[in-house]
Image 1 (cartoon, rainbow, N blue to C red):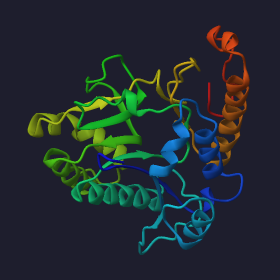
Image 2 (cartoon, one colour):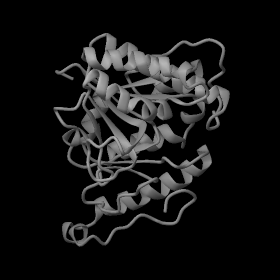
Image 3 (spheres, rainbow, N blue to C red):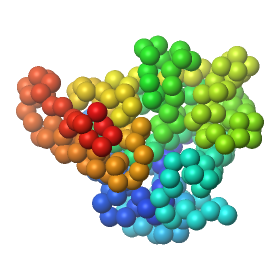
Image 4 (cartoon, rainbow, N blue to C red):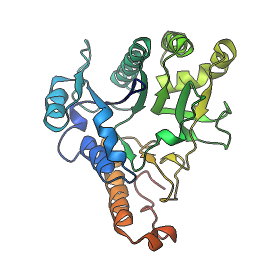
Length: 269
């Protein structure tokens, strides 16, 4: 983008198979409203293994192979396993590199469905804007519970320093994943660095943890609070079925609020 902002997601081979998360991610953007599909031109897909990189090149022009050692990233990584933690902290380190190079980024997990442009909900005054597992009403309250699966970072000296402390937290709070460490250091870092952290309202930047039921306002929907690839795929396919029906409906039906997600699912409720 003109302001040196890049959109990024990260995948491994398990998520690139036909009908898997990458296909659903693309479908959400292409069926989104308000021109959100144009953002695909600014999306870089970071791949974690050769198979994912090869598949990415078949479906998208901007693919990057992040070479790592010591972990086979081709298969699904189960929540909080050793390989999962390596993957999450490796992702965090790569994000740090992007900020150090002077680029802003919006990182999105591939299990986030994009329906509308989310940038309008990111404050120009925020150094970091992060999605919320639980949003308590005040976007600048540190009492909100963050989720790093949807994360905007503005490159500046404060965020570069924040990432250095965040990475150091991996060893300071050994065994924690990067999202937990963010939560543990947020008070300390705002006091020390004066960094402005915006927690995004789940009415617009939503997830299964705290579900927005207003399809007229929702911009993104994350399959958070959901463990296992099969469970995510099941519920996100249902989400996209509802969204397709919503976008095909007359304006009057949309305004009437007649469309609701299919609940309960495996995770969505």
